[in-house]
Image (cartoon, rainbow, N blue to C red; front, top):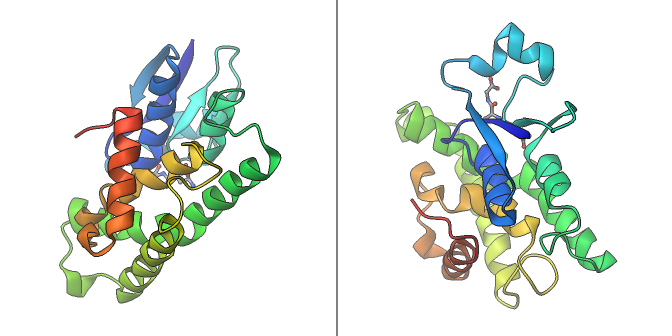
Length: 195
Ligand SMILES: N[C@@H](CCC(=O)N[C@@H](CS)C(=O)NCC(=O)O)C(=O)O
């Protein structure tokens, strides 16, 4: 059986959980507390050298890390990975962008503010600038499109919704980005995500 190692406060880990739940995959969930440093424990690193969650062990014992790689592997052959080559490339475009231009600002600011309890003045102001720019770009895309890639929900939407839906915890009020807010609700409804 598939084993998912993750922490439920992490959007990266929830991406993998949501894909597995959406596809009806059987899995065992193992909690790894990132705040306590459990992803850096020697026994964890021995199996997953990147020392981060999410990470999975497939039924045959092979290991895989990186949220977007895991999502794509689990979703291979499903409607979450567009069959059309261009739409698939668009999905990858947004997933690469998410890891470089979205998550490092929005998820990091959320972690520092919401989980470490840092005051705004103690947080690098560049995170707010970069996060707002990411939300602006998403807003422009969603002015003419319902989904990030092709014409249906894909792993791109799951990858992007993970930290966008909790962006307010990082100080980004989504009411400023109405198309993004509507897409978050659409994606949550499609995946039955709540909480
Ligand atoms: N690029 C990685 C990022 C993974 C990541 O940053 N994981 C965090 C939790 S969201 C983690 O394991 N942090 C604990 C640590 O680095 O010790 C992915 O997409 O999976």
